[in-house]
Length: 296
Image 1 (cartoon, rainbow, N blue to C red):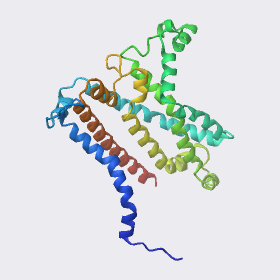
Image 2 (image 1 turned 135 degrees about the horizontal axis):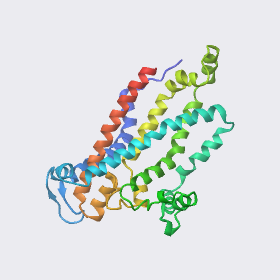
Image 3 (image 1 turned 60 degrees about the vertical axis):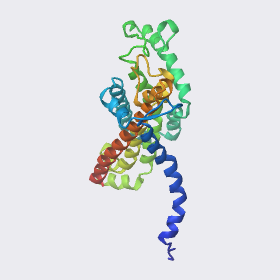
Image 4 (image 1 turned 90 degrees about the vertical axis):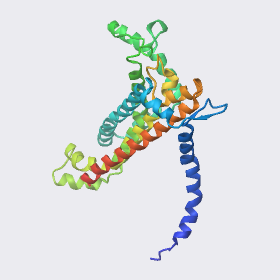
């Protein structure tokens, strides 16, 4: 077989345009955001360099940042909780359901809908009884009047209502990823295991789970990082309210930058969000790589 030998210089020349574009689109804005976070600036007029004062205020003097950070992390953790259930359903669909691809496509439907459409739909469902809220009407019809709430107006439960909507929307997304991974495991492996007495859930324990770890890792990383940047669903449903009870770092960054006109402060929040995403991505990859090596 003839192997085409290419010099490192040629490889570098071909890679360089894409690398420059990637650096310009990704890393340059991040560095600019870090610098802008050191300014006292309203985004329009003159700016004043204040060093790390914005970062110091966020971490030590801001009463809204840490609750927003906690909600952001809870959002991310909640998004990962459904992935094991998606894997379990993917295994069951692959094993017991004929033409499971059709069913998976139906589950995937909410993912392709606009966030605005989904947000408005669930706002209608969560509406108070006086406004014809479907959830409250259902609870009343089954005799659970005491369970009714003004769901998106109560500070202690509003964020959990949004968590549920996000889990509902992206369940089909992670199910599709896990289902594709399960389908790509060769049937010959299961047939050989069946001869040796490993069938059903025993085969899943020793074959499916070890071989699905790389796909599982993809879902975990996508879910966690996507949730850390959560903005659109929250903004459509509550706008961060009531009384900042549903603010995440992303929504707080937006309100600080564009509504409060503290552009430097908002850029500092964006920089901290970038650092948080990078750190947690490294941690997740490290942990899951160890798991992958253990099963491989």
